[in-house]
Image (tube, rainbow, N blue to C red; front, side, top):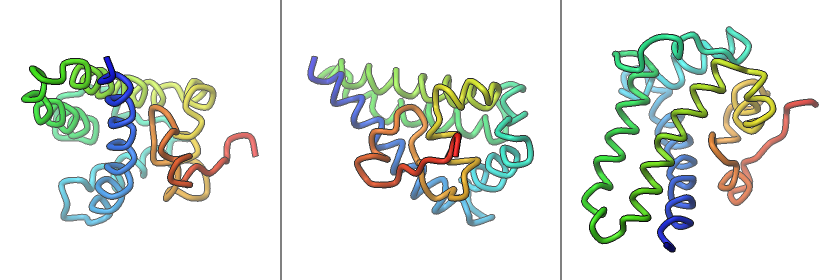
Length: 154
């Protein structure tokens, strides 16, 4: 059962590292696979007051949402060999991948919901510093790493 809290912490750490170093680091390069995050998702969210119309279409496709889903599925595949020895850990990582997609999608379809339930993610997109607030589901690693910056309601 220790796998559950370890899985939650691991998923949040991976979320922070991936967002900061992959989606923003590599994603700023227009020739990178990861460019969808910075050059599509961030652009559209800023233009549409946090709403991202990409989440209104099918999650399967060669667009930002489709690449997000493919990346989450690939991450789940990578940890699957650990399932026989760490079922609670892997199961928690599966849950976290599903939950990440669920809340990220909901937040960009319902910005008012995001302001209330994911203010750190709203702050990431709409605040003055897009190089902070890397977590989406829970701000744990932003607090731990000192990257949580408050903007909503200020």
